[in-house]
Amino acid sequence: MRLVLRLALSAVLLTTLSSAQVVPPNLPPGPMILLNSAQYPTVTDHHCLAVSCSFINTNGMIRDNSTTSRTSASRRRRAIGCDGVTNCHTSLTGTSCDEIFYASTYSGGLGCYAANYIANGGVLGNLPPLGTHRCVAAADNSAHGGAVNRWYVNNRIPDGGVFYFSFLIPANGCMNAASSYCRRMFNVANGYVGDSYGQICSDGLADGRQFAGITTSQRTQHPRCPSRGYGPANITGTDDDSQSDDSEDDEDLVGDMSLVPGPAPSLTDHVYKLSSQRFIWSPFRSNVTLAVGDMIMVPVNDTSTDSDVEEEETVVAAGRFQDVVGTDSLPDCPT
Ligand SMILES: *[C@@H]1O[C@H](CO)[C@@H](O)[C@H](O)[C@H]1NC(C)=O
Ligand SMILES: *[C@@H]1O[C@H](CO)[C@@H](O)[C@H](O)[C@H]1NC(C)=O
Ligand SMILES: *[C@@H]1O[C@H](CO)[C@@H](O)[C@H](O)[C@H]1NC(C)=O
Ligand SMILES: *[C@@H]1O[C@H](CO)[C@@H](O)[C@H](O)[C@H]1NC(C)=O
Image (spheres, rainbow, N blue to C red):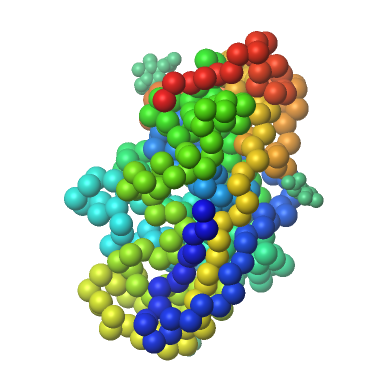
């Protein structure tokens, strides 16, 4: 499937520039944040859909902890379609708009707000010009947001710091049943042939909650993307264009930004087993560095949304999931 993404333009400027396939940024090693499907299953699922659909093709992100990070975060939300009046209609549906890559990273918002990163020697090519937004359970969205912010602080992730996401998998080998796309993705990664990443992706796009790769909300017109040369750079007002229909000027817009997702994912079946018998799965062959004997902070309670409690665990085994669980049977988590 080729999905052409474009920044919203006025009809006058409907010109398409180059179409480019997104190659994975070449990021250095870094720590990983564990996604807990029990605490925020719909947000965990969003990550799995973003991976399955190749709207992201690395699990690495670069934190923005600069002095303008708050403003930039809201502009990144706008760039990915999660600001102003969004597809999620939060007040009507109770779902809220979740963005990947995270708005708190330079990788978020299609890399549009990267001035501070570049000023510090960062390379724009390390920021994926692709992302996705999805309407998730509002409680999940805030639970995940809280977990990410705590993790930044506890792990002292600096401005420009690279980190990776990975999945916490319960001892039975199955992510939370409400993270059904993740269950399917893990099954396929472990060799289950009755499903495919392509099928998972198209099911996720068909459920009406995924607006993958759309570079601006259907209702938030005229994005601005200074780092990538789509101007003008300045956003004024509340960043909510719901009132303005087409009254905003498109002068200075350089042109369309047309992108296709990266190649179909090739996900590893390697996991790390923890002393609690749970597992960590880092789906890409990324620069996450864990080895047997390493200590890692893990949410202690799989179900509490008061997820402040973490404990140190040891990596007791690492390798293919089937080998680590000591059986040839696949996890085969029902969905
Ligand atoms: C990991 O980091 C090194 C440099 O630190 C880089 O050469 C390599 O391509 C990175 N990515 C992967 C997926 O290994
Ligand atoms: C992030 O920024 C805040 C506010 O400037 C600062 O207090 C904190 O120390 C920074 N964190 C790191 C890890 O640099
Ligand atoms: C953007 O804002 C800066 C500073 O506020 C100003 O100097 C510049 O002229 C503005 N650019 C546009 C295109 O409005
Ligand atoms: C986890 O948290 C839930 C909800 O707060 C609680 O009911 C449960 O007993 C906790 N489980 C453990 C093992 O502490």
